[in-house]
Image (cartoon, rainbow, N blue to C red):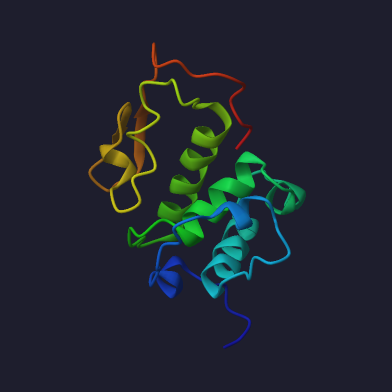
Length: 145
């Protein structure tokens, strides 16, 4: 059925890109992978508030998070909730975590659950329970997502 909504399980075979910068910049030489397209569709159809322009514009935290999730992340995501959760956490990272932050190198591990990243605690089902990021050197504003 071509009208069915794509699910994360449709796009779990991911081969990570070494350098996602072409994707970040929305460079015309970046060829959108099937994985990228399906993840973007899932994100756009979710209930989170996000502007399509944020996913298309060069170097927005939302664009970087989508590129990272589609082209670098190698963790198998088992549901759309898991995809959206990982996407939102990646947006936080790209919007607020400078290289000098204590969590800069511990987040966005491409094959590790975000539940194991510093400052994040999850329920047994893998959904985020608590974010504790005091004194880690964040900068900027909390994204609306």
